[in-house]
Length: 483
Image 1 (cartoon, rainbow, N blue to C red):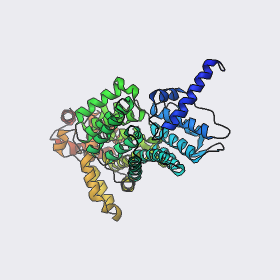
Image 2 (image 1 turned 60 degrees about the vertical axis):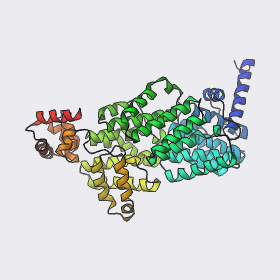
Image 3 (image 1 turned 90 degrees about the vertical axis):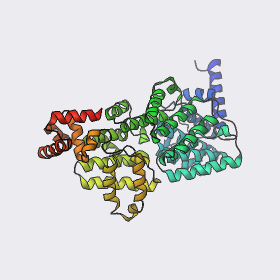
Image 4 (image 1 turned 120 degrees about the horizontal axis):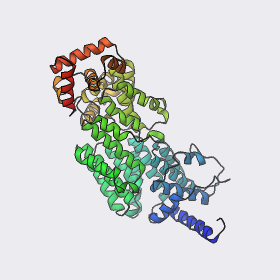
C-alpha cells in the first residue's frame, strides 16, 4: 500500500533507474543496463506535470526510451498525445536545452518503434534544434536518421547518419555505445539501394556492438533475411523468417522488426508464386499508426498477381485518403500498385496520375529501388515509360528507373509457365487468374468492372493462346502452371 517502506523503496529504485538511464542514453556514460530498461518499461507513465522541469522531462525520456527498447508499446500513439500537441508540450515548461533535447529524442525513438516515422523524424529535428552538447547532438542525429530512413527520405537520412558517425569517431566514444537506431537507419538505407554487402555489414556490426543483447541479435538476423531476399536466396529467407516469427526468439524482439520480417516473408512468397499464402501470412496483422509498415500496401503485390484489381483499390483507398499522414516509404509502392490496377480496369488517366505521383516520390526521396519490389516487370515498365517520357524531369531519370525495376521486379507471368509460353497480356493474365477461381463469366465481368462481352473476348483470346478448346482444358493448364 502507498506510503509503506516497500513502496517508498520501490519508487526510490525507479527514480534511480530513470536517472541513470537518462544519463546513459547519451554516449560517454556507458550503455543503459538491461535490468533498468526492463524495470522502466513496466512502470506506469506519470501524469502530466503542472510545469515541466528538467527532472520530470528526463524521467519521462528514460521511461519512453525503455518502452521503445523493450517493446512495451501497447499504448501506441496515445502516449505522445498525452504530453504533446504536435512537437509542443501541452503544459508550461521550464527546461534547459539539454533536457528538452533528451525528451524530444526519446519521443522520437518511441514513435519510430511504433511505426510512426514521419513523427519520429519531426521529434528528431526538434531534439537536434535544442541539442547543446555533442552527446545530445549524436542522439538527436540517430533518431533523425532512423525517422527519415524509415519514412523513405533517404537523402536526408544519409546526411544525418554520416554526421552522427563522424561525431562518434571524433569523440572516440566506446563502440559499445553505438546507437542501435543508427544501425537500423544504415540497414534501411542499404536496403533502398539493394546493397546486400552493406546490409550484411550492418547486421554484423549489431552483433559486434552488443553481442549479448537478444533484441540486437534478432534485428541482425532480420536484416540478414532481407539480404537473402535481395540475393534471391528465397528458400533460406523463407525458412529463417518463419523461425524468427514463430520461435522463442520473438519474445525478445522489437515489434517493428517482426513487422519487417512479415513483410519480407510475404514478398518472398509472391516471388515464389504463392500469392494466396502471402495473403494468409499478412492476414493477422493490422497497420500501425503512421503506416511505417503498411499491411494494406503489402497485400497489393499478391492481389495484383491474382487479378483482384478492384479489391486492391478498395484495400488501399483509405491509405490514399490519408496520404498526408502516411509514411512515404510505403506510400510510394502503394501508388505504383494502384496505378497498375487502375490501368487494368481502364481508368487510364487515374492510372497515369498515380504512376506519376509514385515516380516523383522516388526521385524526391533518393531514388530507392524497393518500391518496385515484386511488381510485374513489363506491365510496370510500359506504364512507367508512357508517363515518364512526357515529362522532362522524369525522362532524365528513366535509365535509373529501368535499372531499378529490372533488379527487383518479377516477370509478368513468372508463376505460370503455361501463361508465359502463351504470352498473355497483363489484362488476359488477370482474367486467367479469375478463371482459376471458378467464377462465372458474369462474375468475372463484375470483378473486373468491364462488360460481359469484353470478358468473353478476352477468354476466347486466352483459349486460342493456350491452344485449348474450352474452359475445362484451360483451367487444367492454368492449374498445372500454378503448381
